[in-house]
Amino acid sequence: MKEYDIFIPLYYNDGRAIEAQKLQELQRLLRDHFDGLTFFPQPNEGFWTMAGVTYRDEIVIYRVITSNESQARQFLTGLKEHLKTELAQEEILIVARDVETL
Image: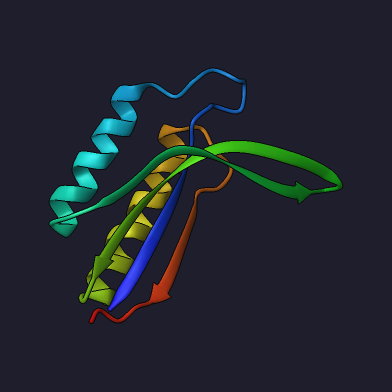
């Protein structure tokens, strides 16, 4: 099984808050596609450096788990490109991990 964490910024690059409706739509889409979802609503800070400049984001994390890795990868690859455009981001971080349930 695979676990995917999707790191979503709370602000556009110009400092405006991303609309709550967009976050709710993403939550609904993931829940419907994966038949479940874990949402970490507390804001987290993310930092990265590009071309010598350090950037900071406030993010929330959406987590899904699935046994259908190939379908999930295809879906999440398309979703990532959509979110980069929809949220006006250079990148959207999605982390995949192998998991085992007891």
